[in-house]
Image (cartoon, rainbow, N blue to C red; front, side, top):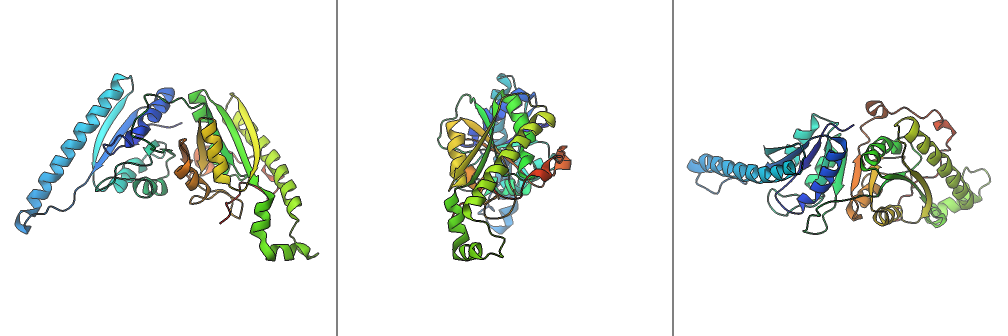
Length: 341
């Protein structure tokens, strides 16, 4: 269970697009919202003798402006019935946020992926990206695609892409929490490579190995069949774990698929289902597995749907996740495909 919802803001409407999702989760789980904004300035353009005094005055002004803004947002949330606090943080935005949330790994960070540009402002690839890579916390990233903040949001599903690995299944507990809180169904998605992906990835060396009777390579069709069986077994296991390990009693839909572009398949389904995607940052290695900077990163950057990213550093033991008793029955083949270059 999350202890609280931390919402970094930067004073822009784009950063405030995270607020409806923060309110949705906080209200459903009866947990408080913490608003934070970092304030920072460039060194004062003043003579050396007066630089310290000028810098202090600018910092005080920046803090006052930040506190005034946060008070307005906090009061609005309180008027809607939420328990909310607000804190202005001195320092560079990324590090200030990292220091603030790092002491509570159970806090859920809900953050817009784009804010204003310019000094002391942030966008995915800078502040949000640094926070994502630096804290152990789960992060719900909301892509800002317009200036109008929706009054409310109503996700209809929680989409959970898996690749058959135990690491990818770290998302299951979070999916169960979110789906229960939102009264939404869970869609378990397993995207295997389209056979053409294998043909392209294996290349000439792979084809030569396949023709060698002593090699361990399998024909593309056999790999595809193994992937399909692995998908079936792993999705069934994930369904059982949702009920057995995490007490989820809602609707669960298992959806195997094939695609030449896994991130695109996830994005399309998340958008069409009005879903929140829940993904781990790392899965198995290899040409057909999830890694941050590849599948998860591309989904975050291109999906209009919010994405809850669960850090791999949060081990199963830390989350109270038991290793599946039947994990050994799953073949070590197949999974979510890496996208062709």
